[in-house]
Every structure is written in C-alpha cells, then in structure tokens.
Length: 125
Ligand SMILES: [Zn+2]
Image (cartoon, rainbow, N blue to C red; front, top):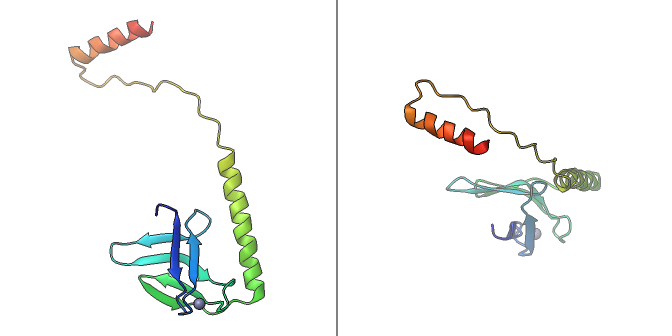
C-alpha cells in the first residue's frame, strides 16, 4: 500500500518477481476481509514464462496466453488510458468561484440564533 505497488512471485512457479503498480490506469487490489483480488489480469509478457493469469479471491485463474496482436492492443490501450488520465489530472478544473452558501432561516428560529445572525450581518457589514 505504501508504495502503491504489489510484488508477487510469478504464479506459474518460475519464481520471478512480478511487479504490478496500483494506479487508476494500472491494477487494482481489492481485499474483502478474507481474500485478495488483483484486477486486471497479470500478463508477464516480459518474463521468459510469458504467463497470464487473474488473481481473484486468493486464487490464481489461468487466463491463457495472448498473442502478439492482443499484447500490442493492450499496450496501446494502456498508453491511451494513461495519456487520457494524466492529461485530466495535470490540468485541474479552475477552482469554483467562492460564493456564500444560501442560508435558509430555519423554521421556528429561537432568539439565540437570530441574535447571532444579526451580529454576523453587522460584522459582515
Ligand atoms: Zn512465471
């Protein structure tokens, strides 16, 4: 959690470390109190084993190999998602104009809050 990253040993058993960054455009780690799930699937295209699986509810579900076309498509999707996401966050919307909240006088106002309002109005000029 601290580093926003999940590191696990490749589930095929080759023992190589698989690093999955947790970001809005990468993986999501969910823990329901009993089991963890990692989404989307983990595709180790850059490992010799080229394994591909989904971790859901503490279980590893084999997802079958992807061919080059699918890998390229995923790389494009990932790049597009990142470009889209970071272009949004880098230009945050202009802060909304600060307007005083419309204050509705509550029904059956007692003398006390009324005095406060009167004081406040005077104070605000
Ligand atoms: Zn492996």
